[in-house]
Image 1: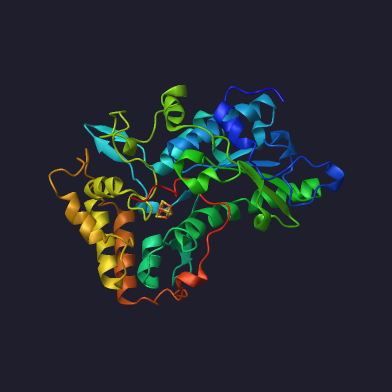
Image 2: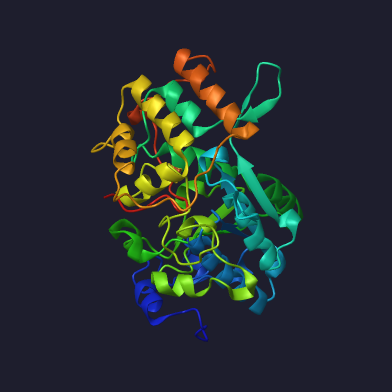
Length: 378
Ligand code: SF4
C-alpha cells in the first residue's frame, strides 16, 4: 500500500504491534478486522463513523479520515457523531464582543469544514422520560446526585460508557437498519477515534486497528480505527488554522488568544480525569458549575477524586498562583438552570427518577471508549 502523508514513521512503528494478523479471507473469523492488515481500507466499510468531542485530536482524526475517504472515493460513507454532556461540557463564550463556539458547535463546525453535510453530523444526548411523557436531557451530574457516587477511572468510568460511547453506538441504528435492508448482510462499521498513544500507557498499548468484538453481532460488524495513534501533540496542533478552522477556545489562555495556554483537554469542564492544573483553571472559568459539583460532593459524602475533594480544588483555585482563568462564564442560561434544579431535586430525593441506584461493581466501561476521556491524573 502506498504510504500516505499522514502515516508518520512513529505511527507505522506502532501499527506493527496491532493484534489482527493478515489471514486469508476463507479462514478469517467474524472477530477479525474486515480489512486484513494493519490499516483499514475504507472501501471495505458501509459506515465510517467519526466520533468528535470538539477537541483537537478529534479534528485531526477527521482530517485524516476525510482525506483518505476522498482518496478512495467513499466520502459519502463518512458520518460524524458528537455525544453531548450538555451544560457540563464547554459552552459558548463571549469576550470583547466576539462569540466563541461551544464544544458541540465546534464538533459541528469540524464536520462542515471537511465537507460532511449537516444531515450526516449527529449530536446525541442522554435523556430521560419526564412525568408528562416527553423526554428531557438527563445530565451526568443528576445521575451522580441520585447514585451517591462519582465515576472513577477504569471499570467505574460509567460517564464515558453510558454518556458517550453507548449513545454514539445507539445512534448508528437508523443507518444500520437502512443499510442492512439494502445490503442483505451485516453492516460494516468503522468506528474512528482521535486517540493518541502518547497520552497514557493504556492508550499506547491499544491497537490502532481492531475488531470491537462485543459490539459486533449478526446485524453489524464493528471495527475501531485510531488514525492518529502515533501522532505527537505538536503534529495535532499544527492543524489549527488549516481550512480556516482553529481549535476550541478552552485550549487558550483566553478565547481568541490561540496560544494553547488554557485547558489541556476539551471535555467535561470538571472532569474526573483532569489534571490538577486543569481543574484549578476550569473551576475559575466556571465557578457556578464548580460550586454545583462541590454541593453534590458534600451532600453525597463521596470525594470527587480519590486523592482530592472538589472543595479543596476550589479553595486552591483561589490562591494567587493558581492559573488565571482568562474568562469567567456566568452559567446563567436556561439549560444550566434546568440542570441545577434537577441536581438539587435529585439530592433531596435520590430515587425520584425511578432509575436504579448502582454501585461501582455494577457498571463497566464499554470497550469502544471515547475521545477526551483518558486524560492524565496528577
Ligand atoms: S470528560 Fe471526564 S467526566 Fe466527562 S465523560 Fe469523559 S471521563 Fe467522564
